[in-house]
Each structure stands twice: as structure tokens, then as C-alpha cells.
Image (cartoon, rainbow, N blue to C red; front, side):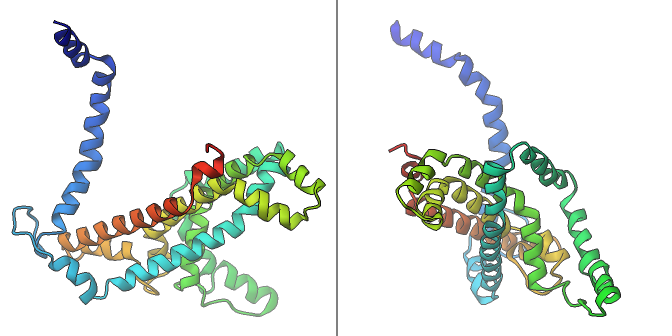
Length: 289
């Protein structure tokens, strides 16, 4: 009798019932499409059915068709972008967290405001700036009689676009991380004779590491799958993996090829994040143990 009451109570638990719509939505909207992508990655090339005989030819073609070059460029540009974002954002985040006071809210609003505008529109704004005879080139010619006509459709232009678009995703985690550093620890280190550099290296960086890690991982994953930056600002300077994925699903109409590239990109991102979290113990850094 007691077992029947327990089973009935669990069956009609309000929390479990309330979770059903969200669970169904997540399964249909996330797990379902992901499972289809994985399934298509084992289908023969240029087929549109999951009822074919599974094959590994798509995974082999990643090497034979030199798609590894796209992965290399994506990893390289994402790594460079994350490094530049850290160099740019750390001083800004430090000022917002420690120095600017009430002005930090205004700076936050100015940084968030461009996010309300389409990413493509913002990138085309950079096209107008970097284009031959555009804003930058024309201004330099008029003022100093020098030209800057070769900036667009280059690798640096792609990196510029990635850094510009994903700057808020590095900045705000850094602000949170730097805010976690107690001023009393810095003062104690200073009283014990530590230099400003030693305080920065031994106190501020380790204690703000959660924000650095979150911002770095977030921007790296976003940059790794970036598409608009390489297409709009890079032209055909380099082909990133997101370009190949889009081309496979659209122009080439090769869903299995696009699926295998997507699966490998997801796997690569997951492996990198897993390794980073294995190497750095955030719980220890935060002080939970």
C-alpha cells in the first residue's frame, strides 16, 4: 500500500509535470537536430535520407579533401582573437570594476548598444571604413597623402571583425572576475613589500581567473564557429570551417559533408573545453576547496 502511494505521488509530482514542456522543447529543438546531424555524417555523400547504409567516407574526406586547413585557420584565428581580446579587455574591465565608479554604467551601455544592431550591418560598416577609397583610405589620402587601400579582404581584417563582434563576451566575464578580487588582499600584499607587478601576477590574475577562463572559452568557441566575419571582411583570403559547413549545406547540397564537418567542430570544441577544465581547477581558484 505504501509503495502504491509513493508511486502515485511521484507520478503526479507538480515539479515533474512542470518540467515536461521544457524537456520536450529541449529534446525537439536541441537533441533531435543534433542527433540528425550525427546520423547524416555517416550517410553517403549527396544523399538526403537517413535510411542509407552507414559509411565513414565523409570522415576520410576531411583529410583527403584538405578540410583540415579550414580547421587550422579557424583554430589559429580564434586563438589570436582571444589573445587580443584579453589584452584589450583586461584594462577596460579593470577600470569598470575598480576605477570608473558611476561612469561604468555608461560605458556598459555604450558597449551593449551595438548588440542591438545586426552583426552583418555592423560588419558592413567596417567594409565602408576599410574599403579602397573608403572612409579610412580617403581620410588618409586627404590629410597625409598616404593610402591604406589593401586592408579589406585580408586575414587581419577577419581578426578585426572577430575582436570587434565578440568584445562584450570577453569584457563582462572579466569585469565579474576582477570584481571578485578583494582590495584587502592587494593592500596586504603591498604592505608586505610586493611590487605592483607582483600584486598583479600573484594576486589579481589568479583570483580573477574564473572570469578570464569563462571569457576566454566563450569567445574562443564563438570565434571558432564564426562565419560572417570571414565572408564579409575576409572575402576569399582564407576559408574558415564555418564557410565550408555553410557551403556544404547550401551550394553543394551535400548534407552528409556538412554534417561531418559540424560534428568534428562540435567535438573539437568539446575536447578543448574539457582539457581546459581538467588543467585548471576553478573550484580551487574560487576557494570552494
